[in-house]
Amino acid sequence: MGRSRYKFTQVDQPHFMTLTVLHWIPVFTRPETTGILFDSLRHLMNEGLKVYAYVILENHLHLIAQSHQLDKDIARFKSYTSRALLAYLQEKRVKSILDQLAFYKKAHKGDRQYQFWQEGVHPELIQSEVMMRQKIEYIHHNPVKRGYVDEPEHWRYSSARDYVGVPGLLEVQIRW
Image (cartoon, rainbow, N blue to C red):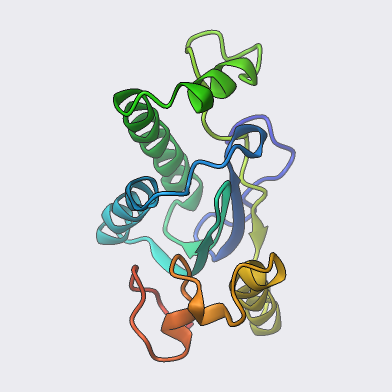
């Protein structure tokens, strides 16, 4: 995936990933933009992707997921969501964000006008139950650390709700 030095080491095992909007531009500030992410994840989940934890903030998302070919599924996710999000931004005429996505686009991306995602996802293989718990805690506490909410389950765009027995916006695997 991309030019990142980080690689999926075992593509069929759970990995912790971070997907970041180019130059940390805040795009996920409306239900419509986060909805595009959820729709894509649901589609991939119907094809076998397992999501164990997630959080979406204004300019990035953290995810723990697993599938038979996680590297390919994440590439599909990034490809589809970038096209859909760019179409949404163009339809809504969000010129300020589109201008930034064009300005910060990497030079080697000459085949397109915009770049939406930063390259790579920094995948980390989940190697133990302890590591899984640590990464889930990190994901769920991200909005708390930023001062957005007092409790992880108060953040709408997080799987923290699922882990306290309240259905969230995306059904996740809480047993691993």
